[in-house]
Length: 123
Image (cartoon, rainbow, N blue to C red; front, top):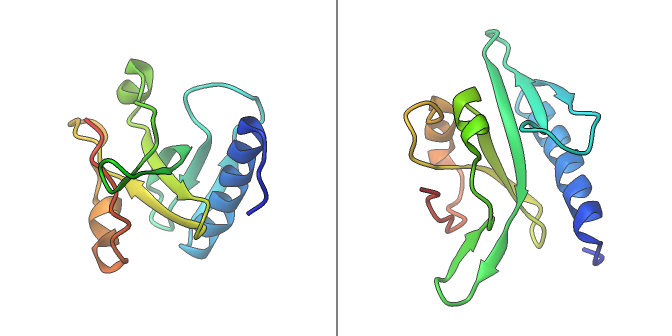
């Protein structure tokens, strides 16, 4: 992938996430602003609504794992925002586990059939 500025890299990750979510069967709505607690809203066929914050992941040699380097804000936790991690080298996406009772969902459970990206658990 071409090297982008941090904001352009974030845009790239979000647009890639939109197409990935479409492939998963979701209707997707994007935040048109440059800030806010939610990047995307995805709606499943059964009507379930998922608020998503897309984070670009980077590999940390010291831990041999991928990290987003960002934590959910209190507002995001209150809203039940899910973190969708994007690995630019392989263009893989995956919901990242972060342990909070309002944000853990079955959608991350359904990823067990996907290859392990070595993601760290956000706490």
